[in-house]
Image (tube, rainbow, N blue to C red; front, side, top):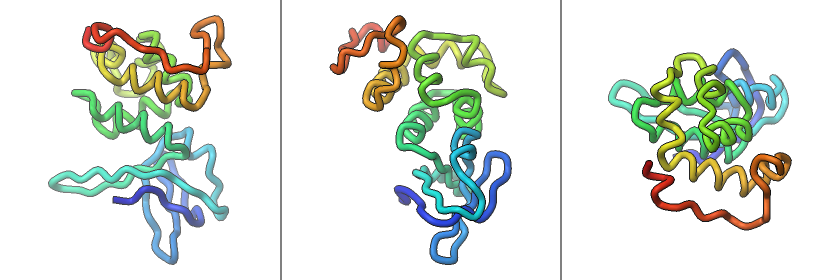
Length: 165
């Protein structure tokens, strides 16, 4: 519904930012990573996701499209709702999260509040891993870690069994 909000940062509190756009304040739930990029009283831009439920409509905002994409992939996982996805994204940078998912680093994933071993084990075994790889390579985040995953400039192909295992 809303692709992004661009305006003045009117209010900041833990996991929430209010962006004033033309005299209307839009409250967006967000991550600590996004909050660190915003300053009260200054211009700010967040890419948004509108979560519609029977009892609520909640707007989520993210500093980058990559962080938004990771959020959307996370909430597509059974057992991971918007609050859990924010917790996972707040525990690390988007680049480190993508690497944790790709490598199956349960310890890094379970450090997020409310994320147990079961969810941490589920994340790398589904399409989130492929999405995280695409995001990381697209934004060239992984080229800084050549000893882990060499960056050749081309999109790697993953066997179908890897994504479904």
